[in-house]
Length: 235
Ligand SMILES: CC(=O)N[C@H](C=O)[C@@H](O)[C@H](O)[C@H](O)COP(=O)(O)O
Image (cartoon, rainbow, N blue to C red; front, side):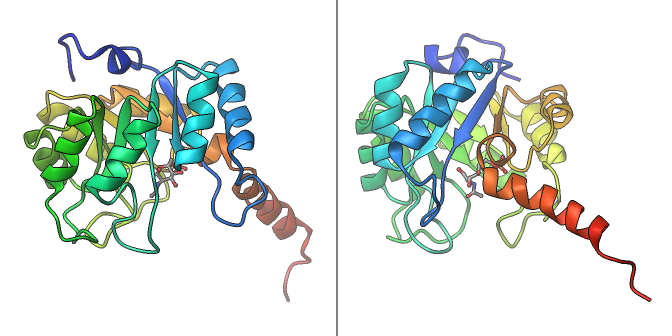
């Protein structure tokens, strides 16, 4: 766990909840003003920071609040899609997001350029780097390469990470024990108790997305249960 003084936007997230406000292509809430409102609603509920996707959403949210903003740009259909190149990093930083989140897994990058180039692009733009990783080794490598925060975001989404129904708390605790930089727990945190467990496992901050800001998925969870109860037992 990071105990020393950290850059101001990171310090503001110590022990706090960050809410990820994202809508996916083609969805009814895929709209910068909808995500701005979603972010403001989350802040009213006690979030200390916002994570958001896409340049237009980031600009809209940045104009509405000065809480720490973790920005990313998902581009591409598979593999490395979260802020995949240094060019994407520069544009995300230019929206005013203090922290740029990017895929720091060991998978091949779309432009074949080294990850270090993306880290350097963020730092040159005056932004901090949140390295989204899937494994312990990727977390170590990201921290060694100068990441300002390491997130467990991609555990469960790569071939060599466990596909768990809930958060990868083992990864959180192993990284938190090994790293000096803050470890952010993110990915499939679906209940307040899981968010608390992530902090107890050593997370510096917790990011929750779907369970707060994705009504289509939330509705599916309820609909599946209700439909299962309604269906007559099979003979
Ligand atoms: C894997 C990937 O692309 N994760 C994305 C990263 O920004 C988002 O789609 C997630 O919603 C976010 O990480 C928060 O996680 P959850 O929605 O599970 O609370």
